[in-house]
Length: 238
Ligand code: M1P
Figure 1 (cartoon, rainbow, N blue to C red):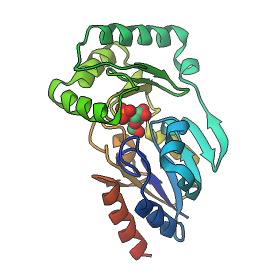
Figure 2 (cartoon, protein in one colour; figure 1 turned 135 degrees about the vertical axis):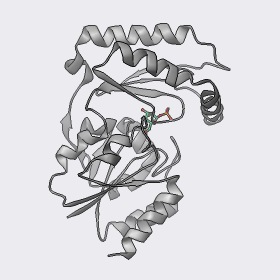
Figure 3 (cartoon, rainbow, N blue to C red; figure 1 turned 90 degrees about the vertical axis):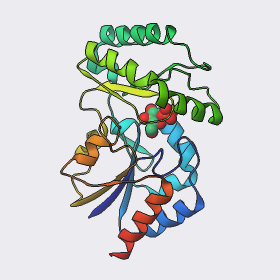
Figure 4 (cartoon, rainbow, N blue to C red; figure 1 turned 90 degrees about the horizontal axis):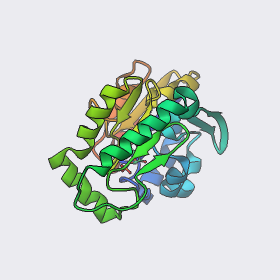
């Protein structure tokens, strides 16, 4: 049994945008040879928005790195960060994030700076309410001023039991050590071949750990169109 397992943002779709018809056609063809799955940092609501009806091409859905697991629309696994780390640590982390963000000046700030998800928190210094243009502006600004990486370095010293992972354009995710994308592999033991595709496979990126794992054949992609090319090449070998 063979599985194609995809990261979502930057791999199946541009960050927080909708899947293209060309990607849907390619995935459709891939289902003749492979089972499909996705594993992303986002929550399921965002992934559904991005994948639309094409979500039904995937047998395995892993929002929040697989801390939530679905076979089709049916949930079979759900762990929570609060129960893992305890309310005290969780609250202290939120306080530290708010304190740090309150000292930083940016070209703009919008709303929703911390998003609570069951398996992680997502911290967005400019706020998750940014428009698509504002996201791109912040991403460029962050490349120059390292807003996120400076925050991540100072917080990770204080919370060695947590992983801080920069996976998207405006935010970073925080979750218990070990709850990176490898988490979902425990549910995929039936497959003898797993091909993983991700754009953030570099050290510090949120695809790095699963990309390096012996249980998968890791593929780095530069964009969704690169993913299409790699999948088409794989289909040809069948
Ligand atoms: O899937 C990658 C990341 O996508 C979003 O990041 P951002 O909003 O910063 O572009 C978030 O959902 C994040 O949790 C996720 O890891």
